[in-house]
Image (cartoon, rainbow, N blue to C red; front, side):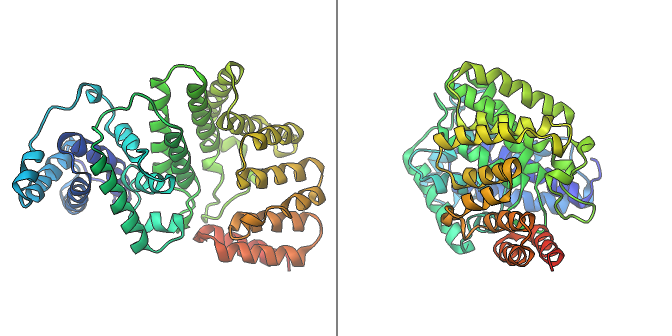
Length: 398
């Protein structure tokens, strides 16, 4: 046994939860009952480990306790449920595979809609609470609970085996991308970022990357992994000691993770020539230009603008258009960027649009309008550190 702080214990349990859930689903099935059993095991661990210390094999401890609880749950069901609960050896394709990765593939089952895939993955693989997932989707917690329950029921009804799929879908990459984004920039709560969630997204993407050949889909996986590494490399510098965000142009670049940057650059450099080039590779190339610039003033903004314009031909994502407007501003001035923002009406309900607009208005010498935009952005964000930062920017414009 070893002692552990409350925060370290919380981080440990969060990282182990999807692994334990995956192990139970692989062994017994019954996604919904398995999740309940894992939650009870986590509660028991939080109480016991804080007092007695963490066991030598915390994952094994959790699996044992959760298995006992799941057996109790299943025994209370009908005789059919009891027969289905009997242990069977995992299928050959699952032997030795990472349970979290298989769980991810299950959460991205084609019978689910993309929003349900993302919600279930954040809940089951990412370890977010239902309330946290609800905040990410801007819906009431009860609504999200019903959505997640229906998604689990559809997976159960599909009869999909707990095994690695023959091929991964684009939905898996999209979910990993959103999972990383939620970890790197939390949409709600008191923390600006959740390193454990970002790290788990990177770990799972690494596993997918190792499983795939260097074909067009494999290149996109390499691009996604590069994008995550190049973005996460800046994490240590993006928060001030008081927890407020630090814009990239004001960050201490000596705090950036040089090893992660080197790995990310190597991945995207190797993937791009193999073609065809996909959206994740282009975003990784943009991130590489930011990370390799010796200073903010030396960033190659014209090249970034060119890459965004190629990216816009591949996707109609309004966030890409918003980032393109920022790049155009940095390359040619705020007037051009503000003109591009005028066509992004679909983003008027997103805090990022108003934060960017405030920044561009501030650059153009319109502090009163910039202040209004910052206040509107603060009203729309669910992140408390970002809200404080935006109010500070608004105050500075007075």
